[in-house]
Image 1 (tube, rainbow, N blue to C red):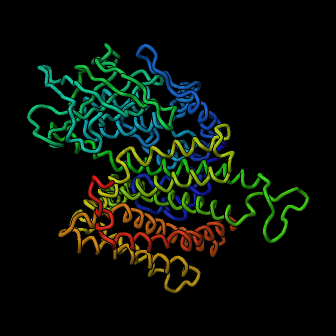
Image 2 (tube, helix red, strand yellow):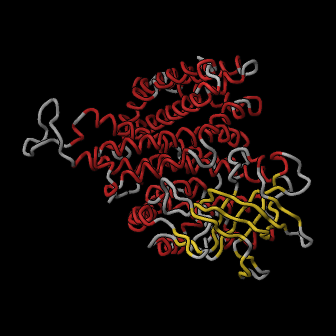
Length: 591
């Protein structure tokens, strides 16, 4: 069975050497000293390896069941969920006014990675609750906050988000779910939603559904959509649970992965709901939580890859197969371990360099969210808005790819279920699809985010990269990083200029290259992160701080990324500059 150990040392390096959290000037960050963050992450790691990871295969094997209208989670999930609640993990970065601990979102992100790596399907129950909590916290009335948030912070009640319908995925303007106003101020919600993660289960007393629906007078398309709070059990004025609402589970979807999470078809048959936020402004309420939700999915992409990598690395060190081409390295045994072979090293280095770079990018993104929310920093808000499609799309694409590469290290054993590697690949696959499929992320990046606020956010990003490159002009040790980043950044700017030149007269030219642009920008972001990590590692070595072996390994891993991965930027640029013709050449009937 696969194992997992939280990468606390790497996380601490990012928090304290790269982001320098205690010096960041963000509310709450001064309290994040090394002793405190180490204690939190170490304890989360114990929960992950001792409680959650052993249930990962159980959840995959047993799945969830629907019996007489009741959804049952796999064996051990309920006890583990109680342990999470009792440990206060569900309340880590929530508002103290409602029972939360008030830690920065960055710390919630770091702990979230640990729990996702250990058991992605399990962590989704509390992760989705956090998203619903955030929406109510931002848009709810004082009465709604007082009624729902304390129980959601503790996860005595959990939450969901209901967007998708059978005929309506990304194009929410096609939505058919209706909301009819009632005399008492409530709404009668009727319709069906599909693909609802954690839609129902036996882990909590109540499930608070946030449901997008169309109320009268809103007009066509997305302008007519409103967001409603629809609890599984109605809540009495004193906070106690009342009658069962008219919401039920039609079925549990049979999926490729994340079997331990109940993905439900939800039927609303005149259920009672209450408006959350402004009428006909449901999309605005939903998008409030999108940066957080999509960063969380981007995190899933690399967190599952981290767990897969750890196990592939252990296997490569233990499995004896063949001899090193330069001569036996294990002469007393019949063969050398797999890790002596250059192609296995390449495979593992691609995994390692991606995971560590993606962690840095995600932590930086979480820090930008904290800066935008806690400091009301508009520049940070604009920058993270630009980054979100990249973090979500690029990291989940590459995360799945790395999970498959980890499986490949095992050879035939990787394809056999008892070794557990196929679960990582199957679980990672969904992250490329939900919270906006990655093709949609690419379209959002090119079609909306590049031009947002007159393009000032992408220009600010280019200036940030330029400043990073220039900062290392006099340091020969940093040349492999700075020069590679400079080249990749110029290629990204060249692609953006191509879109500006072609986009207005031929929109297809831009959209045909959007997916390549998302990956090109992803590599540049990773190059920026690796440059910052290398600088931090060299500084620590110069000052005699930290573990020299760890720091030198970090630098060597970064060099690998800059030399072997960043050249993909040239390929993506070449594809972009072919325009739309190769993509659009065939008539639909010719396919």
